[in-house]
Image (cartoon, rainbow, N blue to C red):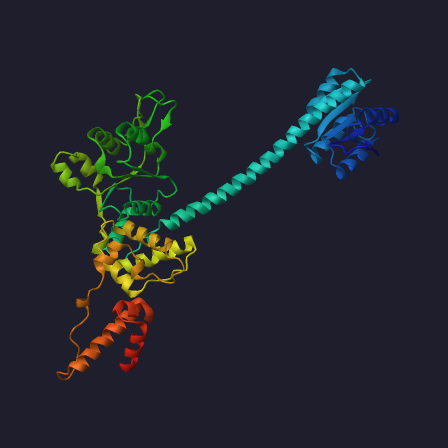
Length: 483
């Protein structure tokens, strides 16, 4: 065996196998300007070379000592299936050549004597094919790796979504929320159509997603559409899809959300904003389980669980003729009313702490907790925007907190400070005393006011400011009162 490297680094290595020295030398001379060429006088030696070197192309004589060229090339396939195989032949036996091509899966045969230029051209084409095949193998491996990584990421994201929208992430320990959780748990196990009612900001979207991800449909899609966010034609196209040319701008067919959610859940928010025509089409889907895209004559079956939501009084709209009665009852198989935040004030501290922790982590803030004064204002405020307004308030506080360590009352919005600021009347004017002694009663009132100011403001400076006296005066007063 001999190697015949050229003067420059070669891209591919070639193995030539022939028992005639002159032919080996001729092949090497024709190819070693462009490639690194290894030669062998027998199939056995050629296989040894193949084990050690990264061979891209094998050229073997049809007749070899010990094993035939076809047998040798078959062993090449076993050891290095990606290598391109070519055969040298001095015979004009077509049947033998065809057999060699079929059994040895040979790329091309070269008849002796060969033309050097034609040989180089055939080798160049063969190695181009090898290069493309190698790239395909690498791309296939890379694609497989990317698909596996994507599968793992999708699995992680699915678990994160399920965790994010689990029942445990809906915060509330009040009796009204306990009733909500009870209905959610029962309805999640079914495919019953659900109508979620409640004021804006009560968390209807969050509840709908939690029900989906706790249901048997959780592995299929959850899609949502605000019915009041789009004009009628676009809403119809978004929900039911359209055919190309159905309207101006419809340049291609498009599937609607009902088809995309097949096997899963569709959430129709603000269902009370739909017009009569859309209500008829929604009724047909609920009754027949069929949708018809805009511009199409045929219908398609869909298996979709419908969850609708509204902040309007649908029953009153039915009485006034603004909402179809039959659709109302189709949607209201199960109704889940969500209480406004003002009716579950006991949940406000837990919600506020949750939003503070999440916002502080995201914004890199050092805020930890609320002073009593700040929390009193949060719990006393009526929250017309409900949970969403509370979350936005905490986000605002964190964004403007600077280097503060806790949320104080003066960091809250003006509306909260104005509505729930304790007045002087909130302090008790009566103090327990054994006899009508004005001095002792006054001292007891001062102790209570100072203690409350310290508790709510967190330090003496802010407590003194709250009481309207200098800090030194507060310290002296506390010392005299034995505090």
